Length: 462
Ligand code: BES
Ligand code: ZN
Image (cartoon, rainbow, N blue to C red; front, side):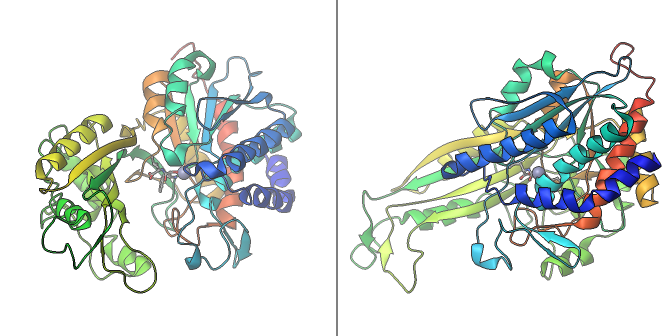
């Protein structure tokens, strides 16, 4: 074990340099003009995977961005771990807010800045480097592994999820290791055991067939952007309750035990408010922040489009306007059903003189992971060995859409062992990954795989 950790420490600089190369690739999966770059990031991961000694490494087409697959299956009687992560990243706007450009990774103060650092490129690489160390020192791995690194997580895994369904046998495994989450706070190493689901949608409000002079026509017709504002204002009431009929029908209410468990993490509000620079929290009345984030659905407009955005003023009634919106879901809400409910409601409140066109983008189901199993215990022990603290088991308000598919299709136990921090600015300007999390994440993973190899539990006796 000491030799494995020694190898990892000796290779810190090489690993960092290689990660920075990957971070230079502009793999924004939602942006089709970047399809070539996105693929190149997959190819980069493929190249490293081959060097590590993983076998059958290849890019596999899914109809969307390809997945990088590879396996090493020479540990008979040992469990098989599927390692999941994503090589794609979120869009980078607003560009002007970045201190250094998003695709020019830069180290400042022990932190590596760049789009995709924490989410998820550094975290993906922690697994490759951990396995590389085990392979070099022991000449073999302690357990069987299969890599499944996808390229469209940040745009909803729309092709990856059906791929998993169709390739159940190829992906068969006992557990899925996922490093794509953050700690609850800087001092609390965290294993996540629940993720919210998501339903992403877009509404286009159409009015006159062309843009109009806002004086010549103002007061006579419905302005599509005013209509957008009216519609959005009717989605939630003053108390943060979603007004879409049926929205809460399938929501499993929080139990008293859950509420007690959430309260036990303490009051996060002061730290959150100071970190993001706001003066008060807000949300569904009757619930604490943690209850709202972990155990209740939410609704957020992600962008509003239409009309004049340029410098100065332009007196115009735009021909159309619209908005993109995400809802976060909890058990037992279903993404497409939620979309249908929202669409029906929006049609019913659409102001006169305009029409609404609805589009479903993508979705993912919420997931709750059982925690009383060997794999979670091994991950916790590895965390404790490296960071000196037993990790907390907490929920997460964000989504990793494919996780529910793994549970349903592969019947595998997800282990959400992440190394990000809450202030990593993911999906935002100046995203960073702290070098300590990256380096120690590699060590933690190596120890975790060694413990997985001590497993009495295999596919046969499960
Ligand atoms: N890594 C995140 C999920 C995450 C964020 C976990 C923060 C823990 C803490 C993941 O890559 C992500 O952002 N997913 C998207 C999915 C969506 C685009 C379908 C999300 O949650 O918005
Ligand atoms: Zn991610």
